[in-house]
Length: 112
Image 1 (tube, rainbow, N blue to C red):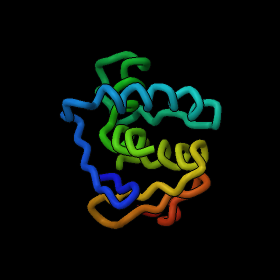
Image 2: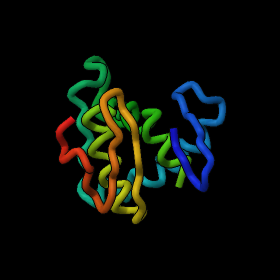
Image 3: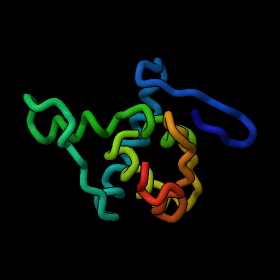
Image 4: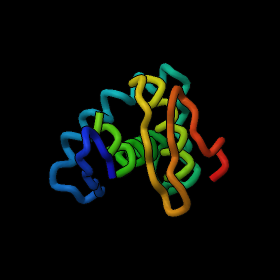
């Protein structure tokens, strides 16, 4: 879920409008890599090549939600970098807590 200007929106990987978010995520991906992001592909399907693994990670629903509104380990790291790139606080809720991402850091101190 993403809240912006007192509006709350929920995004899922099956969202029929996910192409809009995918375009934004794809645009941010190059900037994220320049900022130091390295995809953590250890937990992606093992029977596909490295490039396909990175593509699979790129379109997680958490990233789509955040990109459209402008947590696996990989998404947590990606969102930290996104917060630094866009210069905004990004708040994401997982099953344990709210994470406040600001200036490339998370309020959880990477303990989640």
